Length: 88
Length: 138
Image (cartoon, rainbow over the protein chains, first blue to last red):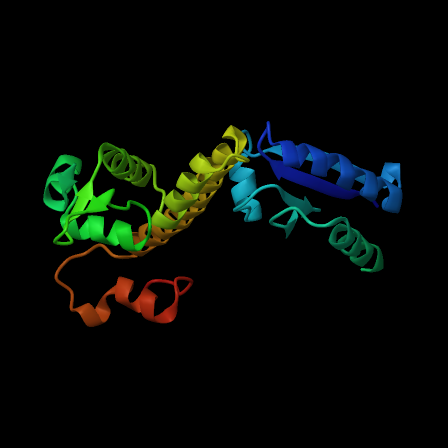
């Protein structure tokens, strides 16, 4: 089963771009390339969706439609969250 | 230089507001007279104008403080300010969604009651508020 990971951010956010690359790499390494559906959500284009997820700050990360991080997680916290998915 | 009364009048705020801004370290008087009266310069007036405009956009004083700090921080850039604005917009959108839900709940209540001179003990709106919105109106 694939895991849908969404990074909700504003375009032009430098720290979001760096985070995106790092976290994407962690997710594909841990879960496998085919098991990750990675999507960048432009908060301005999908404001209603971001609001429905409960996003109040950026960058935020949602996994399978559920808000998991409301600020940038450390790689360790991100890995721990992915591990909990594998075991659930 | 302007006294607190002049600065307040020029900015469209009250002297109490300026004292509060000073307490919150948003606008400091440029100096004080020998007798201790506050004196405001044009930079202070610009900051008051900044606060009023930001409030008009929905920013709270704590957020305005953050914006002013970003304005003076060498390490900050436009993207940082833009993020603050987008996050404010997100919070407003959340509030709007909550207000829309309230409005919808009120529609549901209003729908239940045709008004009229019936005693309030028979009022379907009050009954629904007591029993929960899912209770079917009598």
